[in-house]
Image (cartoon, rainbow, N blue to C red; front, side, top):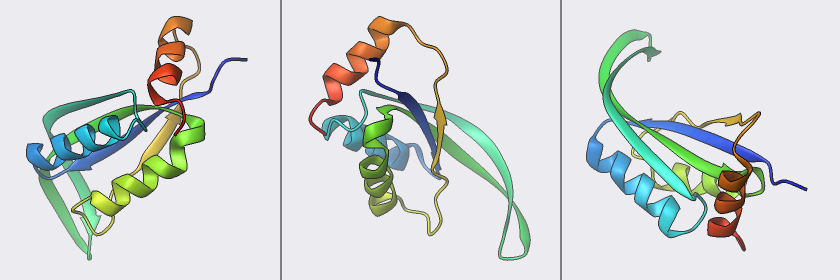
Length: 108
């Protein structure tokens, strides 16, 4: 049976914070891969004001079985009071890629 794969998304206000989170989850083997992209521009409501900020997005490739640990580690190390932590299921992926993710994150 194939392992279920997720992509977790978060955003950070600096490239340094995004890189830190990416490295942390890969080092802890909760994510097999993390990609930092940006800068991006985000628009959102916060404390009754429309905000416009430059952010960096981080995408983590994780097994669904590691989601709770990954979410906890992101939340504990994220600089935002309320970080975006969203996981989307991967409907289809190259089976060898899924196997690689499983191999690199096994035991977590």
